[in-house]
Figure 1 (spheres, rainbow, N blue to C red):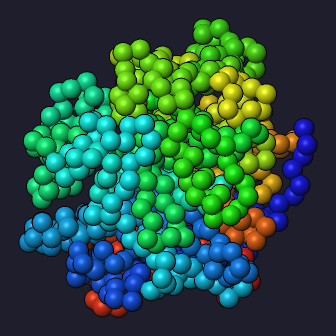
Figure 2 (figure 1 turned 60 degrees about the vertical axis):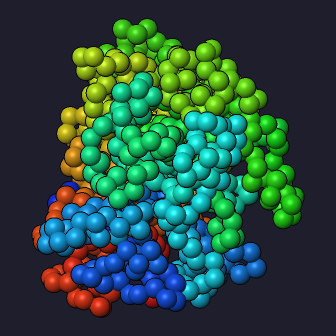
Figure 3 (figure 1 turned 180 degrees about the vertical axis):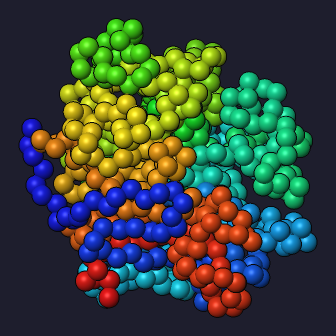
Length: 608
Ligand code: FEO
Ligand code: CA
Ligand code: CA
Ligand code: CA
């Protein structure tokens, strides 16, 4: 086993921070600063953020709410001084964005603001030199907001299907808007992928069909209430029965071309996509791994029909932008190596000393043709969960990010938690999901057979069982001493540094181990394999998302989502990131409450 070269991003791990503390905490020698916050104006005609007097028109020209995934793409020829930032806006927390009086006075106006706070943002960044902090550029020509009236092109075998047509779109190929965007990835050709996750929550539906039930679509008022304003958010409306089928896809955006039409790729299936990450296999085909973040749902892999072109010309890039439209879709089946009786639900290791085994990628669509008896290709892609049920896939503990290590090719799956595992009426434990009532989550490590990313068989083992052993949790860190790791719970998003170390951001630690969520470095190779070190901690009630680790520059970026979510407008739980203590300062751009933001962490000497 080769030992990774030392990283330039040396740090002394921080101590875990109690869940009641409203602070952003970084290691000694580092500083943090927001790059862009909810409400920051993106265009020359965009008004400054005014938290007491927000309007739908202003919000549509400003950075949206609850940024989850983030990506930074440096612009060629800029000597590292210009970049495009992508962020998505998953949902809103109306209870902390608006006063009770405002919400009571004009709920339709509040809903319109909330709609404009969803979607995507692309914004240009600049900095003085490669060491300096980034700042966003208001009014840059490539800045873009993607809103609910932005058209998306459906691609792949289900595009045009009768299952995707509505009154507004008889072609079944053109969808307005994207919803519930969670994690994502940057493709080798420089576009951004973003996963439409909990789309069901935006729709009222009949709720009686097997398909509606399997996707959590129900006949009850939604929390957002948009069905009161637009008939397409109520699929009981004649002509809009299929509207919810047009969400739940992997979206691809070209951040360099503000006139481009973003895509929704039906070839990667319809599910509650956490995100997708692409790897170029040795044979040139591209592979995209994607998880369905629901208790007892599945892990998927797409393999392209066509090969990646590495030439780097404009024509090569246009070709590569078609790769996610044709190929094969698989779902994972795991088999343990140990007798079932040795997996007792506590997290104790089986007698062979490892949670491990083999696995298969079961075909759902092969070369564009359905591989599932009784379902057409279009049905498999639109109702992918039902196809995977038929195929006999393994029910997982909520697959969040799934990401191949760019150095080793091994694939890492963040299983965030599963409060129902092993409960009466639910699936019991197995070797790949070995803890009952899994509160803290675990990480699966997959090695594709022959190191071939397009293989249909693999071996696997668990890298870690998360938790805090000082609170009595049964944990496992690939044999590394549990006394020497930072406590960690609910792994969500993954990233790698240039040395192949794994970085994990978490979502849900406060309600489990009682610490604020954070970002953690995990050593994968050598004597310290399994060592977990906490790099940062986010403020109260927030989730850590979208980590980017540029270890050569010693720069780290995270998305801080839903800070202060458990508080109220009148009594905020968080004042992140401006920490304006009291009162709303109208017209000052300051807001006495939390603002989700993308944050840069850098050496203090560079932060000046
Ligand atoms: Fe939006 Fe699976 O987290
Ligand atoms: Ca075993
Ligand atoms: Ca997530
Ligand atoms: Ca999560």
